[in-house]
Image (cartoon, rainbow, N blue to C red; front, side, top):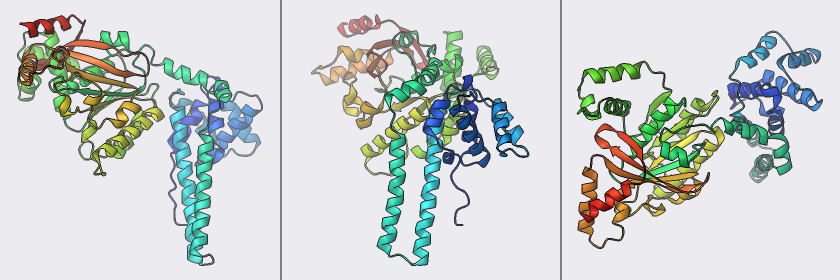
Length: 461
């Protein structure tokens, strides 16, 4: 035998089986309509799954003891199997990730079938009984049968979905119904449910600071948050938090994040350090350098498992991910497509920071502002753009030099006036939100749209 380590994930298999015993087996119809016994690798898990299928088909709601008794009667229970089954009840009781786990198990099963098919091809080639063309034809037939099975398994019939899946899917989304971003103006406009969010910004609009503050506020509201950074270190991001909290504690402070990193201190800052050190925020920084998009998603996937609610993940930023393809646009399109698939499979909330096209730095934000934006427009569920609010008042100005001066003056304001424009929202209508950005202290303060008048007054004067 050439291959002893077939693709599998016993932990995911156990998670799927565990979910079948939760909420009176409400997820079982979804599981058994999507998986077969062969989709499980571990022999114990195969037997447990088959017992669940048999009991359910006989109109019996399976529980751990019923499965144990069923396996005893069929002589499929041995040694430590009794304890193994009971331990399934100790796993995290949630059905939130069943669909993504089903996809993982089916993918592993397909890979095992491909390996088996390859073994037949190798065996035929070594024996020499068939011609090369015959071997190729047989191999193609085997692989095409796998594709046919996969395509058929992806078909979802409407009546079957309403019978088996809709209740569980709605229950999963209810987990996010009361989520708060900590920005009241966004919360009034946007249900921050799982999806792919893309955010871009003009220079000096503070996209990294905005996203970091957003994740910290979500963590303060009980969410698990992961910030994936290709540029900034954990020290740089965490000192942003310290500088912001210090400013909220003492608005006369002169200490910035950069000064804190250089050893600046005060009694108030020591109190901030102590407060953060003794908090229980589920907020993490993942420092990255040369990891590809596939490397990143492989790191993140286990971090999205075994949770009641999927995490909020921010990627900073899209264009800096190392790419193999020399065509930048195709590479970015490929990354966005993979990010969306990962988001859908895991039910995570993914925020992706994207750069803007330099040609649009002095124009009101639009989809044209996004560099290489092909799949961003089509794949993202929500597209946000941050800009200096003054840009709304100088659009189409023929005097470029004057426009640049106005923008430079806007950058020097304390605070800066920032406009968040929602360009796309699959979950509702588009909207506008406004902020005061205290750039020296890494703090975004939501405000009403009266900042529009402030910027118009500045231009007129």
